[in-house]
Image 1: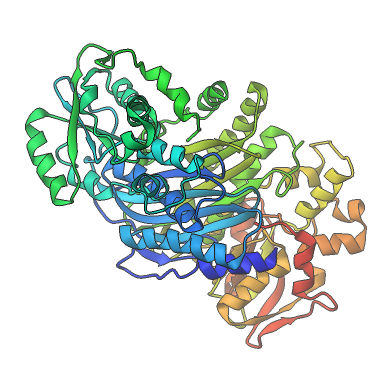
Image 2: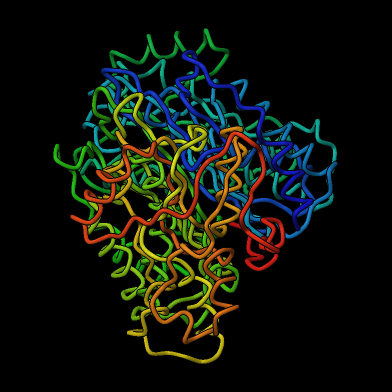
Length: 317
Length: 317
């Protein structure tokens, strides 16, 4: 397998050291050496994307590379952290040069777009899986966590929901037009890093929508010791979702589908206008979808309970 | 698989935050939040251990947990870094509570012994694989790298070599006495963190012996732009190795077997006595095995070329 490792080395070593990137020593020694900045917390997370669990085996390799990094970066976005560095642990059974070149291009392009520097990794033989460790920085004491939601806060989501589940459904039906907005959003999700940073001093809590809106809302409510009343009809649905799935399945996708990688935030009501304005300047909508209540539990979801949706997603992430 | 995830959560969440550990926020949010110390570089590395590639499927689960962390910590040791934090990306097909409890015990015990705090991770379904990202700190400008070896330096190794390959050979023959020194060293390697830190101001270059002594020496020589003359007869062989494998296979194991996780260091000759003294105080031998030369290439290895040994190990690490 030496030749494959050489291929991989060729596609994954264009790493530059420098003071701008905070990289003192990059790929090629036992460790990378990084220079964290003073006054910052180091935010770190790892997510593993497994073939046929988290993405289809026949997805475009460029999308697989993009997506594996995007889902990890989304965790930094949810803390309001600035992306800085990443490591990739790649398991691969076999691969040709074209596949790897395309996979690497998708990964590197998202690195470049988000200011993330790849500083190391390893390669093992196995079923295709990409474990990406991301590191970012957030000013001390300012990180957005799950436990800060307070009764009276507005709950709001960035962008629109349901494209993750909707895109998967389309893919399973054989749709292969990568320009289809649902496929684009499913296979090339955009981590909301800029939005998270823009909300640092406004939001009281945040999480990224990976398990599904209701499940992720449940995580925030549990961590914060509060409840919520949803306005289900306000949940913004991804463009083309109703046309693709029909109204009922579209709503299920938006509420429980997961893999959207938008942000769900809790904000004091008087912060909402400024938050909407800031995200609008990024071209991103911020839509109120409910309120935090002192009473525990989730009201306003009608017959749809939060636990019912967990089965829809099914994956372990 | 929900119950398995609950089991895993139970075994892997005893994480404490606190100023002593530098953990501002541990397992349970989108990211962990850490507090790097001023004046330090952050050293980071990831290694993935795959069943039947890096360890036998029927190895004791406690050893699997220990070993997966140890091989990553060994990369910190090779830079002279102090271990601080880790993340675990676990892929697992199925597991019972006893297996997970034992696996977690092996992992946590090595965490405790090395001052490493588990701050996060993820779990996916798949063939058993453990990806461990480790982070450590090393004073700015002091890290041991591969590129500092200078002509005239002494080459030396910690401990003794060959137990990785020797232990594997014994395991494959059916030996299951975990008290056998070769099995112990193969399945429960000890990352040489204290040794690496002890040599920070003495050594000019360092690497851990994971691919095999000659292969790893080759990495140092290439990075440093130098050559070496080996004294092959001086290479310390693990206790019991000759008895287990015979003299020829024992030497092959010591020179090319890999998986020993000792340190190979390059030191100016006048630093050698102090280095030996410091490591002796840790109960660890430091044995000279050759000298760095200005001429490129590797002399003194007789018929044994560095490239021949790469086939012995075979694994991708």
